[in-house]
Image 1 (cartoon, rainbow, N blue to C red):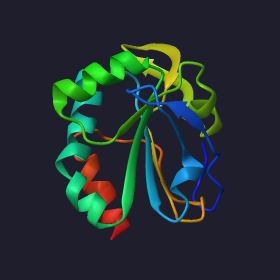
Image 2: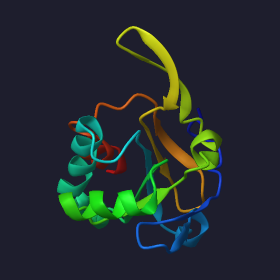
Image 3: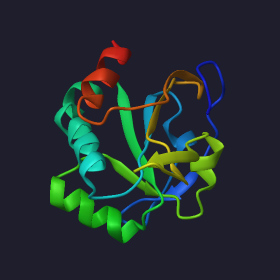
Image 4: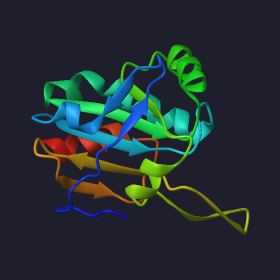
Length: 151
């Protein structure tokens, strides 16, 4: 997994509307990139709603919020609409960006190991460098945790 001090890999991925969003288009701004396993699942919904509930304060800190999963743009559109999510959700069905950030690996669930998306978040500075990495995220209060890190 990438660490603070490393350059964030650029990416260009489709959003829920079919537009292509790239990290480079936000140079000059702080960007919060968070990786999550699946739309509309309990933990991912809590995490997304935590970002939604702190969205205004995150914007006030000059941050752009981008969530990335392997779900399709159509799935993202339903998820955004259902929970009124005001930030970008990008689709990485090929898992290229997920793997480039190191957010893919072995997970344990019910005593069994499998590969999947590791819930993780990165704060990228105005020059494209990672300034903070959250390798193991608790979804409930992650929005306020990221907000505190931006302060």
